[in-house]
Every structure is written in structure tokens, then in C-alpha cells.
Amino acid sequence: MSFSEPVLVVLGGGAAGLAGAVEAARIYPGRVMVLDQAPLISVGTCGLPYLVGGQIARPEALVLNDAAQLEARGLVVRLHSRVQSIDLTARRVTYQDLERGSQGTLPFQNLLLTLGGQCDFPGAHFANVISPRDMVTSLRARAWMGQPECRRVLVVGAGYLGLELAEAARFAGKKVTVVDPTDRLLGLTRSDLVEAELKRQGVDLQRARLVAWEGEGLARQGVLSDGQRLPFDLALVATGVRPTHSALQELSLERGPTGGIRVDRQGRTSRGGVFAAGDGCEIPRRDGPGHVFLPLARPAALLGRVAGAVAVGQPGRFHGCLPCGSVKVFDLEVAWAGTPPEQAEVFAGRSSTRSSYWPDNGWLDLTLFFAGPGGPLRAAQAVGSEGAVARIQTLALAIEQNLAADQLANSDYAYTPPFSGLWDPIVRTVRPSKRWA
Image (cartoon, rainbow, N blue to C red; front, top):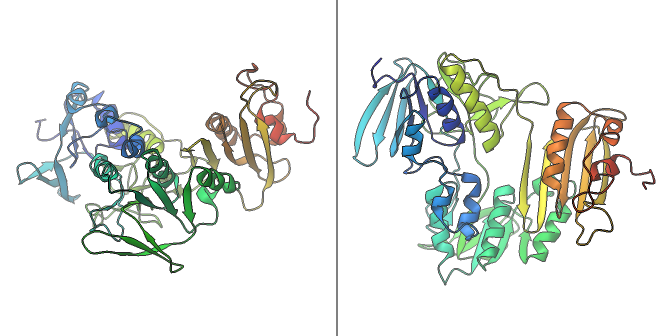
């Protein structure tokens, strides 16, 4: 086979694409090609909000592997290559070389689609309305943030990205307003704890929807659904992504209700030899039947790795995705796992994270959702000064293992006073009526 006919062509150099490409290149080094329109790939995108605010000072710190390092691992990398069309019948990709201004075609035997989703938002034509989703847009937001005349930052959306951007803007010394219409931030039962932390840190939370921008040349005000007008110097949009991409829209592939490409547990699409992973997909669930759209790096990389292996004839199976996540909100840890059932037995409570007599003790608020009395754990939420992520990692495994409250209460945990109490917060939450020693 010639170089012009690689065994696998990967479109997109994010978490899903590179996980798949590296896995395939273990079997066929030098015959796996990755195309991406960006000047850099293998970027730690989850760290981009902290680059915007300056907590991470050097942009290059977020580049996990440069092109030379990826090629040393058996990949053929083409940057500055924008996909224009994909012909599944003729099995070729047409792309534009953004550096040379030329067009090229690339035949493929197997194709892995990891181009991601789209973030289209009104106001994108204003230079000071930015959605920092990649290195280029994040550096643009950082440059605006660094201007002396930038004093007021409006963050649109209070999901994990929006909350991280709010903290970044406060770190940079800006006055920050967050706009979000939802009643409960992040869908948390105890979202009031997150709201209190935002207020304590000087962030103004407006429960409304942004409906319009006002300004000439630059946007100067955001118009809210309640009629209020909020002046700003920089707007950061974090309203989420849709599982669609212009280069994928016309492909005759099975899709789910969100429009995302439907894949199986090997990353296969409805077309032979065509695989997909990442933010453009609906992926199999882990905690039940069906599919879910979950645009996060971890499930993208897990599914991408499986798809890359299967595409070159190796065994692999994606065991599904349990919806879970975590976010730092100033001095709070916030984490969650699973989906609360409609009819649930709920255990909730606050515990110290270390022995009660230890100085500078932390606290943790846990909410656990069980499938009825005596039923298995189905979801968990944690908010606290420390320990939330660690407990959710434990509870995510408990959800997978269908553990009930009594089993959690009798589970064993490591104990030493500087790090944990004799009775872990999980145990204290599921046995609130017992008098512990």
C-alpha cells in the first residue's frame, strides 16, 4: 500500500481522534494519517479557561504532544488542513490546505470522524464576543482580558465552562456577571451552595436568558429576557455545543434525536469502515440501554481508542458512558455522577472530611439517589471545600456495581486523621440516624 492510501484516516486532532490514531498506529506505524485545520493539535482543552484568565501563564504548557512527537509515535500529521467534503461512496476526503491555499484529496480504507461539535451563537461577528473553545479563540479572549480598558466581563452560560471562565475573569481582576436562565446550576440539588460561593467571590448571577447584543463595531450591552441591559467590555459565551459539523451534515449516517452520529460499542457508524467518536456523536450509555450526547474529553478518548483499534482489525469494546463530571468553582469542589431517577430515595447530609479534631477541617455536602428503598445507587452529587471529586469517583464505581445504601454503609475505607475521619462522608450520609463513635 502506498503512503497516499493510509490504513486509517482520522479527521480531527482532539482527544478522541488522537486516542484512536495512536492506538491504530501501534499496529500500523506510518500508515495512520490525522488531518486537522488547527495550527496545533494535542491541546489540553480542559485547561483553556485557566489560560484565558492567566492561572496558566504559558500557552505551550497546554500542548501535550507536538507534531514531531506524534510522528515519532507512528502518526502522519497534516495540520492547517480543513475538511471540505467527504465522499463515502468513492471513499475519499477533500480538504483545503490553509497555508498554501490549495486543495487536495485523500483516499481512505477506514475513516474515523472526530471533528467535534459546533458552537454557533449570535454575536459571533463582534470582536469582543468570544467563545473560547480552542487555543486560537482562548488566546484571543486572553488578549482582550489583558487590555486596561477591559474592566467588565459578561459570561453567558453557567455550565462547567461558564463557571470556570467566571473564575478566570475574577482572577484577572475583572468585574464579572454570569447570565443563565436555569433554576439549578449544573442541575444540582444543592446549587444554592454554588450560588453562595459565586456571591462570596463577587460574581453577579443573573437568572435570565440573553436575547440580543447592542453595539456598533463592538458589542457594548447584552439584552436579557427580563428587559435588563448589561454593559460589558468583553463577553465570553459558554452555552454548550451541538453534535453537528458542517463537513458531516450531508453524510448518510444514522443519527440520534440530537443530530449526533449514532455509534455502537466499537465506534462503528451505520456505514462500513466509517467510525466516529467525540462531540459529534451519540454514544452508548453505561448505566442502562440507549445512547447519550455527552461532550466531554474522557468518554471521547475512551471511545476513540476503541474505534482506532477496531478500525485496524483489533478487538475492542466501549463499555459505555456514565454521565459524570466535576468543576472547580473558586474555593469549591463540585462533582456528580449518574442520572437521578424520577422516583428516588434520597440521602443527603454534610460531613467533615477529616477527623473532627483535626485543624483546618474541610466539609462535604453529599446527595445520593437510590432506586427506591433498598434499591441500588443511581446518582450522586457532591459539593464541598475538599474531597468531592474523590468521593464521586468512588460513587461512580458504586453506581456501576449497583450497590445499595446498606452496602455503602458497610464498605471499608482508608482512615487517618489528617486525611479522613473514622467514618467517611459516604457512610455518614447513608446512615444519618446512627450515633457514630
